[in-house]
Length: 385
Image (cartoon, rainbow, N blue to C red; front, side, top):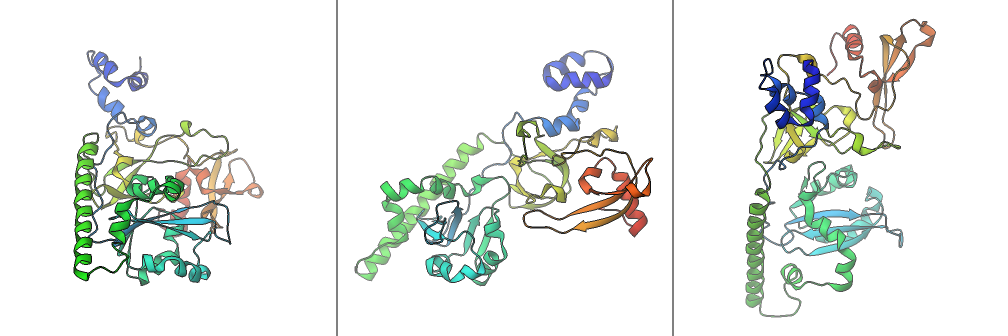
């Protein structure tokens, strides 16, 4: 049996097969051979505890100092308002629900301001997920002028803002049947006319009680969560594989897509459990990921050819009909709406005349990177990044 055939056998059951093959001669590197298989690293689901210990969000010192936000969209429109903006105070858990137009654009600013700037303007920090409604120019500029720090969650990690997701799920029940006492008394301590000293004392006691309870709950949750997780760290420059949740198109089954993309280098550490990864433009994803979505890449130091994938990128759905001979020119197609921009190359085909040259999407030339690199070097004297 050839070494490549033996490697295929070992992939299906690593430990039992490894104990058998290592008893023979010439199989000392079997474990390394399996560990550095690029196809296995990209396709297999990890059978181990998720990486990254729990890192609780900091506790606010006063009500409405830090809030989390989200939108509930797609509701029937009433008076032109079809969305609900959910704002949750991270200390008192007091929630505010405001009807909003489909998009908070500049021309809608008066309607938005009358509905809730008095609530938002006192906050110093926001916890939000990566969304076009939050990362847009109007939204970021508005809170920049208000002196507010916007803090976004990492890609594919909704656990960062779990309290707002929970409030969204219980919104109808919350409005119809449930009005909790504690959030009300912490965020709005008193509505009558008591003595100022007694009023301030009761409010401070309630805030301190809420902070103590939140700290105790966070400590207990961290202890429980860390018992089912493992510690993992990366350094800048380390190569990692990234767990991607691709949007399937047409009839492609998501179970047939590979689990991980890469390898890609680590650019920077963000906080304690998140990293910025240098991604190619074709992935169209926010580059900051929670460490549970990353795993170390193991390269084959002896056979470098095994480190290069021979499979098409996930978003490539067609192949070239003819063999390309050379790249003649290129052009940049600008973005249109939700579709990002890309590069097209004018390709001359082997055995065909110049009149049959055609423009091809850059992704279709994934098997002919050398032709693209040669074109850029001859045209500009530099190689593409």
